[in-house]
Amino acid sequence: MIIFDLQCQNGHAFEGWFEDSRAFEDQKSQGLIACPVCNDTTVVKVPSTFAIKGSSQSVAFQSPKKTDYHKLGQQIAEYVKNNFDDVGTDFAKEALKIHYGAAQPRNIRGISTSKEEQTLKEEGIEFFKLPVALSSDPDSDPESN
Image 1 (cartoon, rainbow, N blue to C red):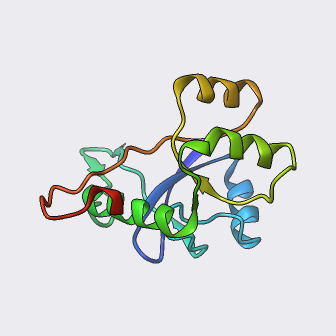
Image 2: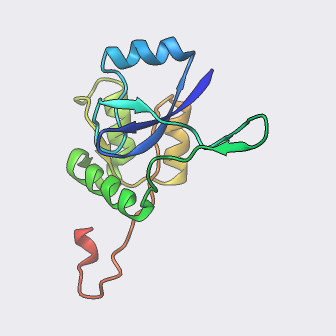
């Protein structure tokens, strides 16, 4: 298993795990590797942050540009808001319906309890949790986030 640092043409950095370099090239040529932020499939390997010991000194490679994690978090939140159906507190029920073919497959987002999350794990349903960013603007409506 090998891990590559990757970057899309929009500058989003992420990493990918591959069996070997050939597996990366095969998946890339088939358009199977996509940026998790913007879904761009124009992806390149970038130098990892590591040191190469030369005869007299080490050379450190850095990512081409610093990542603005606050902006990245906002982009991810916006992407999820625009591309996932909000099923509210019915998240676990809807995920189970989709898993068992009782509902049309689609991206969903919502709220679940720890007990519901345990049930989803036991049923083999993959999901991930994102922190909810609340606006610091006192005039904003928390329901609109």
